[in-house]
Image (cartoon, rainbow, N blue to C red; front, side):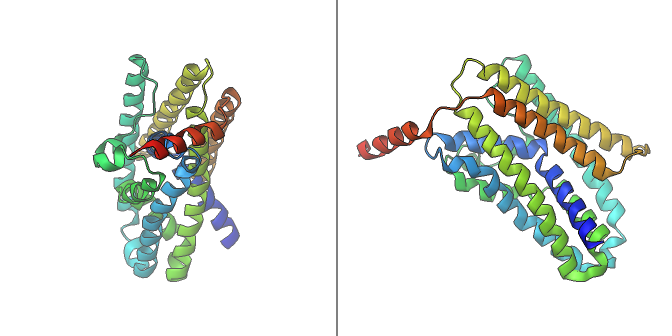
Length: 272
């Protein structure tokens, strides 16, 4: 049961890392830091997931300490979090579709990203991904997800069991978020004529994923019961996104980073 539970939560963590709002935040941070830190910007997703993991583990620990007392409210917590998640996902999809309609394909639009302080939203250091990820962890949909998983898989195992569940969730999230920043890094460094079309496919895919997940969650809220388990649905979402990653990766041809690093180094030397 421990092995199966760990695998299930790992897959659910990958699904959480594929959240369109995560992708939008990582997209924004990677693009901002690329010019000054082209090599380090590749790992913005890892740093973002690291900051996010602090909150995930904290929530898991609280669930482990409270045990059955919080399990009584588990269904209510999950319902509130799902409603918030549906609203956020629909807003993300509509915002990105609006951008495409206006021929704005610079970057993915995110709801939470717009709420960040300007210093975090427009900063150029890859390390800003850590506090941004931490702030994203305060979202109620994140709290409700990890609380639900900790209750389901680790409520009888106490603090250590719940933290173990949280750690596996974080590991899956780190994998997806890291892949995302590597992909965006490749997009930003691409100078081919196919880049606008490739970026449009990327944004359309994120919008479709957002609407699909929102529709699935909304259907469950109004009483529909899927014939497939949530784990299978989450796995399908992750595999679909990985297919898009593979497409974008194959379509892009990034320039070498060495000349960019050299140019930035000369700029810093010439700066009084």
